[in-house]
Length: 285
Image (tube, rainbow, N blue to C red; front, side):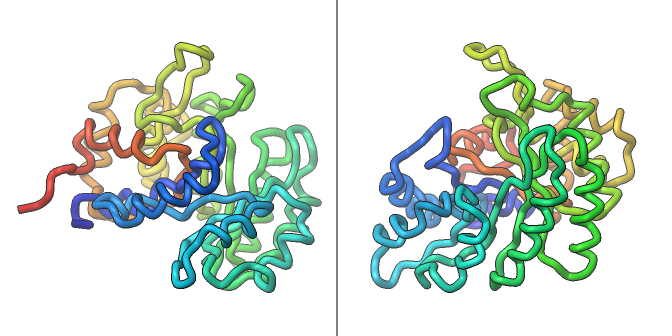
């Protein structure tokens, strides 16, 4: 029943159940991930995201013949990530490794140079460098683009939310980043804050969250050559009509530029896509 999930949403949502705000115990996350991977909406589901420090625990939760696609989040010193290929259990198929290269306000280049070397220690895996949306961003994107053009499997990752207001980029800031990646033909991932399809304000925190369908429509518009202001308009809108039609018209095409995002809930984004009519929950006849 994979035709129920259009190609545009293929592996859009990584399973980040063990990360905040869900923070599920690893055993529960693994059990739920098994269900997601066999459900009718399985094409929507990306790898299970796990901290590097939890890989040994994860291996202990798998059956002898079980295999699981994993996205490793670097919560350990980089030298330990370099040893992943030799140390990881063969039942864990590492599809991607993500790591921050700098804190806000720090020069991202030294950390980026160190992370680039990780690609030589991995097989069949992509590396994503999380770059703060502050000073040094464009230079870091230039470095990533140059390395990628040389054949290195590395791309960008940006934070779109968190526990502080400054971690939520404005529509103009995010639009500028999307267009900068577009200009460099640089794929990117996003993390944090993308809890629902449409832009909305959390009544408890007062933070305004980006919508993942907003990001999708805005990225498609950027790829067509739109300016930052036009891209920002789609990121800022709360009108579903302006977002659904672009996504519906391209639903059978591969998603451009934006790799996807992690969510601590797989069912929340799925439910939003169904409500917007972008995914069909009914079995095809």
